[in-house]
Structures are given as C-alpha cells and as structure tokens.
Amino acid sequence: MSVQTPGPLFPKYKGTRSWSLSHKSTLDAETGFFDTGLYYLQQNALTERIWIGNETAYTKDVLTADDTYVPEEARQALSTVLPKLFVNGWGPEVVSEIESIWSGIQGHTADGLPIVGKIPESLTGTTGDDGQWVAAGFNGYGMDKCWLTGEALVKMILGEDVSEWFPRAFLVTEERLQTKLTADQTLLKFAKIALPSGAKEVKS
Image 1: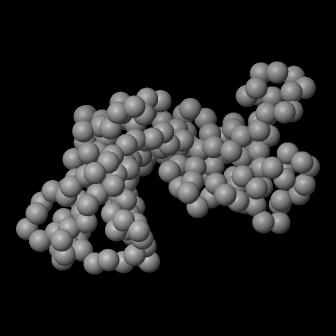
Image 2: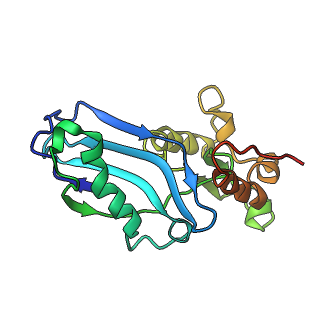
C-alpha cells in the first residue's frame, strides 16, 4: 500500500470516488513472479493524496510472514501505474511521487472464501476444547467483510443464530477442510494461475 502525491492535473475528487483496476492474474512458473492483476485506490478527502495498493512480487515475497519490507517489484509497479492510468493527471511524467509505502500480510484460502467460526478439533488437536474461534483468510478483500463478519462471530460465540444473513460458505467445517482447503487444493490454485494464456487444465 502507498500514499502518493497526485499529479498537477489530477482532479480534486475529495473522496467521492474510488477505483478498482483488474486484469487476469499471472504467475511465471520459471521466475516465480506473481501479479494478481489488481490495483485499488482512492483520493483522501482532506489531504487529496492518493492511496493505492496492489500485490506484485515474487512468490518468495508473497509466501512469507515477514512484512517488514516492501518488495522492489511492488514499489516499481506502484510508482509507475498512476501516470499510465490517468493521462490527464500527470502529463509527461512516467513516475509518480511516493510519500509513504508499506506492506502487510494477507491470508489466502484455496477456495477464495474466508474461514469463520468455531475451530474443529481436527485443527486444535485437543479434545473438548470448544473455545477457539477464527475469522481469517479474506484473500485481500477484508475491508468490506470484516465488520459484519466480526459481528457474526461474536453472535456465534454467544450461541445466537446468524444463518439468515451470514454466508454459510464462509463457515469453517470439517467437510470444507477435507475437500476445499487442503494443501493440494492450495497448490493447485497457484498452479492454475501459472498456466499459459489459452492453455486448458487437464483433469484426471
């Protein structure tokens, strides 16, 4: 994520607009370079600075718990994308000014859905321990889901029924753990991204 100075010609939207820019995810199987194809940005209403983030890095920098550094590939992508997208904002400049930049850890799941609810004994490894709950794995889309998910989780802990409004597909179940969230399915998810354009998956 970064905070950038808007170009001299960039309009002052005062926080009334946000943008999501997306193209097909790509993964180079030889180099490990991974591009999710997603940029998300908004202009701050008070400072007029542009907040923009993306996920572009080598897999060694994606599959890590260390968020103390920003991969150079991500920094390069973020510093050059705005002048390309907004022709009327930066003029002839090809690089925008980054005022601040940082990284963070995203939790991803093989089926692309969050994991919410009481953790089964098969994961805790303890019998009779029903006090462990989880809300994680939002695949980078937690900003709009965490608020109501947190409310739902508290209600579930208190024994209240949330089935009428909370997505059942988000719940952590033994069936989901054994079929959709296995290590094999996780590897397959990344392998599919690495398929060349036009290639078809061969199912055995």
